[in-house]
Length: 561
Image (cartoon, one colour):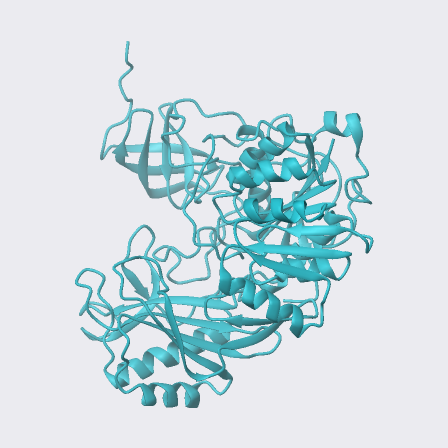
């Protein structure tokens, strides 16, 4: 007989929070019923109002914090609870790192059905507290991707599934405890060999290592987890009369309120590089002075849709991109002159035209209004030319950590043949080429391959070859031409690897596969396919590319059995 739901809409209940969803909501129980509550951390007790009830779970709004977690901190951003850009500023940074590691572990176990070393009840070996600070000397992946999930699971603080959640129907991929303790080892600085793996893929090895399970290392965090983003993409709108700092009709720009397309006007974002904030402020002020209209997605009218700013962390060069709802920019010369005067470091002012009724930021037409079509920046001594639409990691400091780890896991001695299956503008390819015999990069976006070739030439790196196309189509052609990879590296978007590519990897049988992931769920799904096809997942290194958000990247080493 069907059991009645024990809570009702608008009822006030006490909820004990036991975990976090993949998007940072607290999850807990009231009267044995699962509720999702924003701004609630594991270990907290809250009084909440039930907003929505489904058959096996519901949503509630926190009214009162009855018992706070020791991991709760005051969010420094004044609009943290309105803006959807960050989700975890109210959680201590070390707790964020532990949670991200546990999120990876949960995905591996519940979606990939993989065994994690030391994980009896959600904990895993590899570090004393699941946290490693990055000490790399250089300063995420910005992937616009719909979330593709595998099996969905809800877990509590002890790693045990919460009763009453409807599998496949909840908004969670995995709900992880914030601070599950690790069972062994100690945190080590970024780039140092861990106790378990002094040589990647060599120790632990064989049947004993397979039985012990996958080593998930402590998350590598940042020493200073603020002001790390080198790119700002700011939606533009018109202020309403009741906004504090804007008269009705004036130009505003900031970020969308969580779960909506309502723009929160802001002049400062604590995860953006200070220069990006300053440039956005200046561009908005110039637009107001010139009477520029903002795009209205409801009517399709208005000119300015987005302002994008890129900053070279090493070079200091700035690119400004004006995304417009039309080809013509009134008073364009005054726009350009105003930006050049206000932003002395600007090297490129670009217009992108997007007339479509879409949430996608960029259109197909990009033209230079002034200066160069690229700016330059460096990662670990490698120089990159970055155009308006180039994919380039937004956290340079952690990108170096991530890519160094990928090269380490590749185990290169100078003679190997490596394929980079999602090469983009050649960032990982050029890191690999410094230690490999030859590197082949493939990418479906023609403009990215043009950038990759330019970047190889810019750095005098000649042992690389780039091709345009789908990896699963180009790689077999290379094989027919005699290319036999020792290592294949993949760095897919959030949706993970195409099934055809996974089958191509299995057919080519490299000694090692290095997987760079930005989505633990699709990572776990893909690892299951590779494991079933004859590979063993040896170790996983989570890297915090996006502090104070729920996103986590990871580098994974697989070896052929």
